[in-house]
Image (tube, rainbow, N blue to C red; front, top):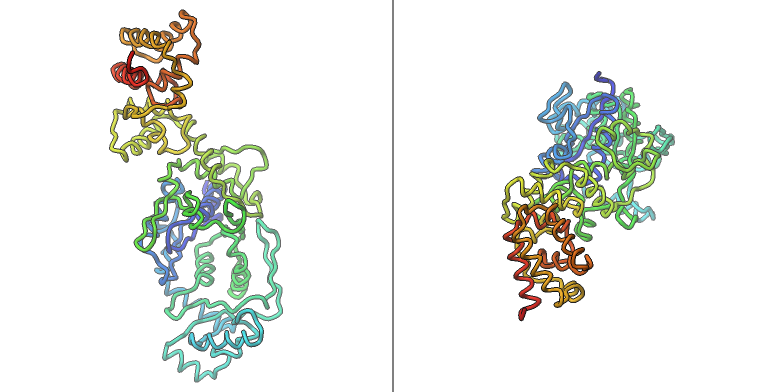
Length: 509
């Protein structure tokens, strides 16, 4: 049964690709909404039109779709509380900002950029680290608190450099309960008078955020800890409007692999791993690899992200999405930052590949092969998957670690040849080649029986024969099951490769 009182939103800004930290935020909101039988909402917070990036909203939706996080309400999905893009809700914010002005809890500010710069210089002369527009400085500035009513009206009619700032009270302790951090308190003297409505009539995050959360009946706000300090302003505005605030939960940072500092897109570029869910192609800067293009399964990425900041309290590491929903709770979120470990992410992906059915992997592996202009029948690819799935961490490795299935060796493992091939055993390899050529059923089972029986009957060691046959077939001592490899390559191809190899190592033979 639908719980109409539980409503969570994921509210990204379309200013670029969705960072993996944003994906984790979406995941936690999604899991909690599903666990409680509530509603998961996508809201596009595009109030900052100067930073709007074309294609970013589509990217966000594509990423959520790839990961299976279907939103119940949002752009394209609809719902009773739309529009779900803040730019389409512009008209409603001004009335709420005006309400706060009328209540003397906000004010008009007319400061030009030059005047603000002079205020910064004055603050610097006083030895202050930076200028803060707050209860101690607001009366030095050009705003409706310092100007006459007539001057204010004239400037409003002129309409230049008009913003509305929140009037933060002096000498107050502002407190709220956070599901992750417990009781959090701020002294109002530490807070600045945030701009809540900009000169273009668009709200800032602080204004739009609480108005939309209230109007959309959001019950829980689960977001990154970078918004923790702003929550004091939000709690103030809830009080000024006489609205009940939602439950807050601020998530820990995802840290660099070193554990020092927040993970950034530059870290991905520097260390060669993705920090975005999908490929981001940019006109102005380098393209950024995505987890999907790197070869991750969506389920494994969700599992990896789940544990970057949350723990069930037991030793379980692998969860299906249903398990995640059943187990997830806000009070199990960890306060400290979570170190990004790409090797661990690949380990998760390997486990999911191993446990996935070959039919599920089939279109994914065929797509990887197609990148190298390789096309094979489904039966061939399915057998390839069965041979290789325990030997790969990422989907592209179904090709990169099995190129010998698609092209004959052009070189051989020199160390392996030197160590394992003995010219005195050439007669045995010739005999095995003839036996394989006349074998009735060219299957891995029959091949294995034939080779093992020959070794036993001729009192040879497996180490003298197996590695050489593998090198002759693939060029390397590494690879999947030898006999499965032979069967998949086929009798004719195997004999051609063996002949070429033995001519190479024993040209006078």
